[in-house]
Image (cartoon, rainbow, N blue to C red; front, side, top):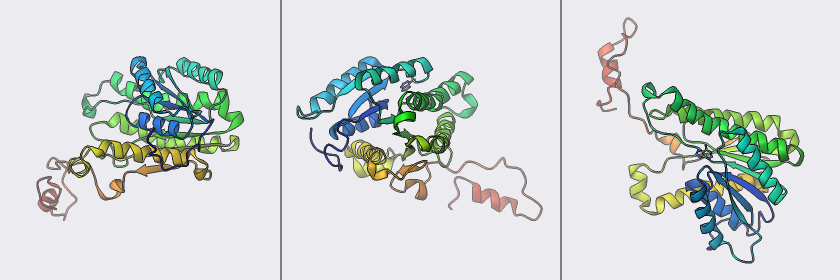
Length: 284
Ligand code: ADE
């Protein structure tokens, strides 16, 4: 395997991680870096064929001398019984669970007014309830007695998430869940943190990084996750690390909305000037 991790080889030798959504995108990048560092990785998602193909691809990159193994296990994280089965299968196979990376999730874009209750619930169920199921089952079956580290992958939803209100709400809830669990489970030696990736798929970022963009992005997320899982982060819990190159500080993805239908301002305000200021087409 081409050494690309900045971390010490063998850092996670003989550890065991579950990575949900580990067969694609960011989850795959995280799984590959964990494997490179010697960790046994269980990748999990609903789509078993894609998962098995990803596991086979990852196996080709593991050197013969490495103790790391990758195992694909199908699980729908929305279903509590399937999550229970996942956790007991991992314990049966590997005898321990050191790390849980909650990366599995999904959403679709839609204006809030057109979201069906079914669509809304599906996104909340996967991104929030699915993450909760995984945390709860791993804690009950292993981490309560032995400690461990959980990292939740959320999103840049600090300024709302117009067009995907369901996932924004679910990810903000996971940010809060991270804090609650960090406190409740601290006495068991469990650390719980989140990573909030920025969006590099903006036009300017794409132009800047060209084809390298997606892989640079994924590597920057996976190294942040490996750091939080490592002993280097042993005093960090209940926190959310933004991995966005400062984007959430200096940039907003959202256009200025049209305010022309706004109610009259209080007496004495210059209503027309205010509307002009809030006009998306006006020069700020
Ligand atoms: N990734 C997206 N949706 C998922 C689900 N319901 N279970 C596991 N991984 C997923």
